[in-house]
Amino acid sequence: MIQTDQALLHRTAEFTDGSTGKVEMQWPDVRRVAAFRRNVLTQPVLCVAISDPSNIVVLDEAMDGWEGLLKELSRILSESASFSQWRDSIQGESTDSYWTVLFRAGG
Image (tube, rainbow, N blue to C red; front, side, top):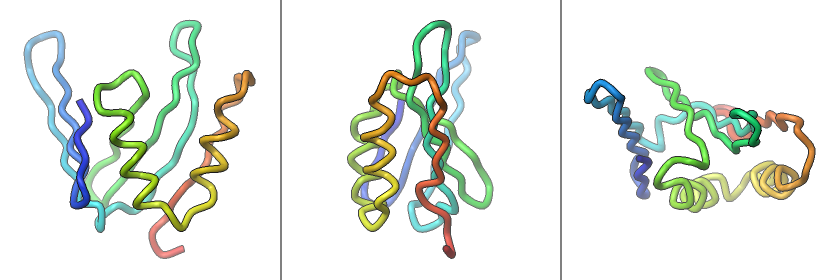
C-alpha cells in the first residue's frame, strides 16, 4: 500500500510469510524521482523509483494508493515539465521503458 500526504510518502508491503516491511520518506528529503515502464509477465506496468539519502522505493500502478501517489507527485513536481510529458508519452502502445528522471535534488 502507498500512502501520501503533503509531508511524506509511506509504503507498506505485506509478504507471503506474513511479515511486513515499511518505508517512510519525507518529501523534502527526496533526492531523485525516476519514472519507467517495465514488463511484468505480458503486461507493461508503470513504475516510479523514489530515493532519499537512506532508501530507494519502487512503486507501481498495481499497488493500492497509486492514484494518490500520482496526484502528490504532480503537486510536488509541478515545476517539472518532464512529469506531464512522461505521463502523456507512456500511455502509448510502445514497449520502450521510457526511463525518465523527473526530479533530481540540486539540479
